[in-house]
Image 1 (cartoon, chains in turn green, blue):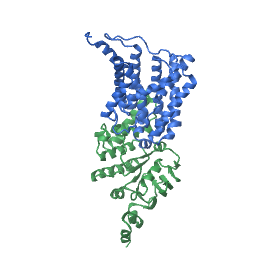
Image 2: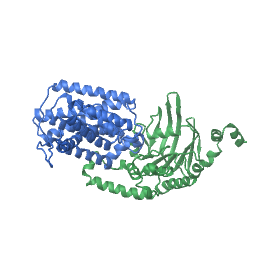
Image 3: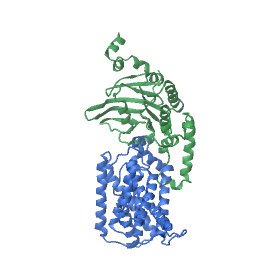
Image 4: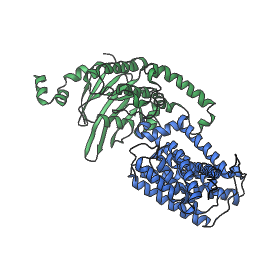
Length: 266
Length: 296
């Protein structure tokens, strides 16, 4: 067995509750550098809450989130993003009324040394910086994700599958170290799902980006993940390689109910 | 009475009306900036105008600073006040019902009004004239110089802000933060900072308008109420549209000028509102506003 890569993103004993509802009860998991880690579980298991806690929208009552060894629990979401933590949302969260290109360029926002007045000396370093960023985005994001033909379209006019891809493009423009994808293929047809799977694999393999993924499409999860973590009722009920997870009775019970689990065990 | 209609006079009134609409549009821009950027209707906009005018008067007339320096100091001071207001008043209220925030800005308006009254007194001050008075005479009509140049100034500022929002990095970040704060956060945009910036910009816009208006008339705390007349403009234009603010500013300026000329000064304040009422019956979200804006 090859030695496992060190964890780049590590969540330890995370507790998060909203009033009486315990969304996360002691969740621990690690996303290892350069690997694809999938988080699965039934609806309401706490997957998106977990993502929101990692992004910094929710402040957990207990536990820690560590990124590259640093405790980022107290960092604001914008700071976490600047450190290299990018994500997409379950529902398409593009800025409507802006073009595809503007949306993607906003992903490069953290990497420009812009301040409110830098527009005044647009002819100086700010312009050079923006030009360099633009070239890089053209090559590494727009061409890479094959959305060149829609770059100047308004995002609202695009079909759903393409909107999801633009959202991925915007996250990539951040040059993230960790890419968090919340249901990247939800609602997509088979062909769109296969395209997205290919892109995610390319992002991981060619760029070494660490991917943390929430997904209900088990075909996709089993095909591309290195490691699968199963959540139910805010707790980790199993984890391992796709092949291991598939056989764990706890997991089967959560997904299929008690009787089916008994049959598998038999 | 068969001397015929005086077309020259009509042209003159119309031109003056449209040109004076420039300042209305500028103040409306201040409202729209804050509404677009933070979702708040700032009833203290007129007080920003008033504050700008009083700061400028203090620096330029009382301290005898040169005009350019006084102007720079004034704009910096108003921006600072706006930032402090955003930090201490608006930020703690974020997430509260719209009506609470609205009431807070009305309270802020009274506080600023009272503060100015206490510090400078309720007297009328004579402001120095800033814009050239020399009238322009294209064709047979005569346009007062101040009206013309105030329009030019307003047009320049509005254009600059529009370009800034459209193309600058910070401007695009501000639009993003306004349309979806959570997503903006995830992209590394400091949403709170952009909101503070929005207030500072609106404060500066209001201060410029206030200084110009006071230099054309006179300076008194009543200036604070001037912006209420602009409410007709922003409601007509649609709360969230800069283009709407411009067009509506010109339309209201025109209507005010023509009604004052032909129907008398008494109805001058009524006709714009009546017009707005009729237009809103047909287009409840204003001329250019996004549909489904909640009306108050």
